[in-house]
Length: 181
Image (tube, rainbow, N blue to C red; front, side, top):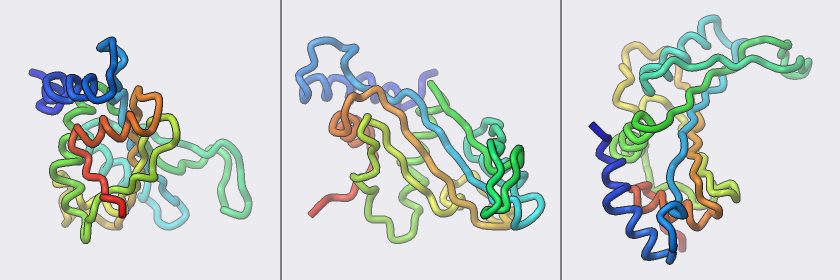
């Protein structure tokens, strides 16, 4: 069974974008290609911080995260080559649409004093990145088992050629952008 948001994209969003942007071919319509969640962890703080971040990211996404390691040593940051510095998960296809639906419908409204996402977080190529300061906004997290607050970066990669196309796509899919003055 296809995710609810995917069927909504096919039935409502794609025709609306074709009409609004005057696309001549259905394959010109932008779509979400993947979503990447990244948690950077300073392992100098506590032992077990990386394991906690990996467990939290696995609970949020349902996928096992990949551990990232430092490529080179930096003395000022007390960082050694090969030391674990974080973890990430790449979501595609059905899992990506399910996560995007949970992000827009349940997680983002749980942010305290939420007034919408910034319109300036596009990278110029149609991709959108947002930072979440606390993992407890996701309903999968059990508050009793969290030892420390850990933020994460969420990058939504689209096939759009420009930021305007990506903004229209994400807005039609339910992304709550802040209204500019």
